[in-house]
Length: 343
Image 1 (tube, one colour):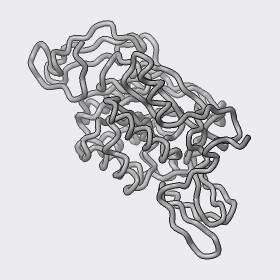
Image 2 (cartoon, one colour; image 1 turned 120 degrees about the vertical axis):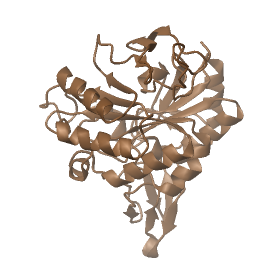
Image 3 (spheres, one colour; image 1 turned 120 degrees about the horizontal axis):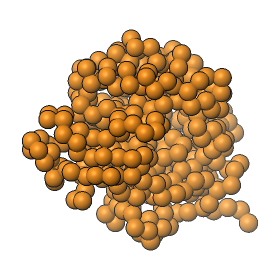
Image 4 (cartoon, helix red, strand yellow; image 1 turned 180 degrees about the vertical axis):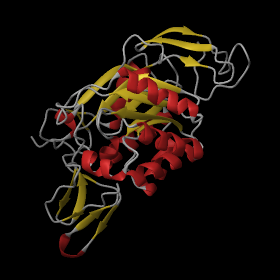
């Protein structure tokens, strides 16, 4: 029997001559011949119309702690239903999930679930959050949007973990139904973006500004890779841009690289490099800076940026102590930026 919804008409497309079609979803702006796949492997020109191949095809689903996304200022210590389909509009040399991101959605095992069924599954567990994660959610845009709309009707909050490589119009249509994002600012150098991810820098910076201006809660991750983006000058340039563009209160996560995929010859990031990156960010006025993929440090704890009191003590993805009082520091009364639960 033919799988249901094997083809789902894609949003943001423009028909061209000779049955060509242009995808307007992300900055690649792929122009596709009849039968051709986009760079994401998830959208295909079929007889002059663009279709999504990923709609309702979930290849990964799990309940995670919200801290794993990572989101540290968005309902800490809350479980979140996390899901993805296959495909990605980047082809990162260091991808941790290449087995699902660098393939067509219909060529690996998947589970067919409608948006309504995803909501029903979420409500059946003790969680009221959904994360679009593991691969790049932009490539299953229509599916994500349908789920997010239904989620908001049911009082479920939604989170998008993204590379930020999405055009402005689709982003603006999506934003009203997304409560938080973590955007991966991979490099602060266009040539590194091109050579390592096949993307470019400026569209990601535009996305960061748009999300920040929208009021959606935002956190940023920067994976520090030896011999690529670990130079002190590069980190200073990135932190300077963030501070000068209003991101002082946006949590910044410096994450440790481990050899993977096509960068297996690159060593893990030295912890001292991450500690220096954190110091640079704080010196540039970024108030909340965290280190990821580093065991047994206190650099995943949250401190008040005003009086430096401990607010949240973390051990990996577990909250050991939670001292926030209704989103304020209990010692000096400073409002702490974020979306907080009532522990």
